[in-house]
Image 1 (cartoon, rainbow, N blue to C red):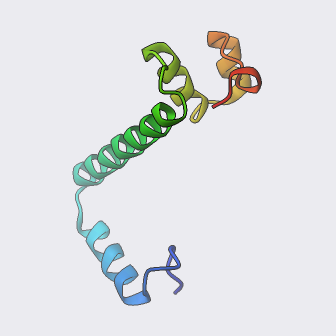
Image 2 (image 1 turned 90 degrees about the vertical axis):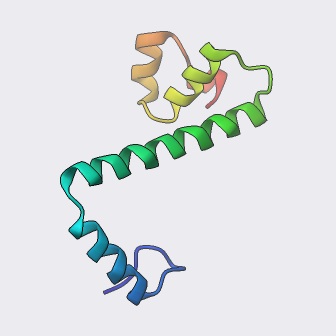
Length: 86
């Protein structure tokens, strides 16, 4: 067995897997939701760092550009990643 992360030992990886397997489906969904919120907050912070004057609309589109296919995003919203950036 090889750990998924280079900085994690095999022993710790086994413990992580055991803990995940012991969780109920509801607990796994809650964990996934928490991780998703963390990612969104981290990406929002990076956007605000790079675009300090971004309004809520721009932040929303920049977040979407990191999660949605750029052609689909442009079709649905008009936000062109190649012009506006991520």
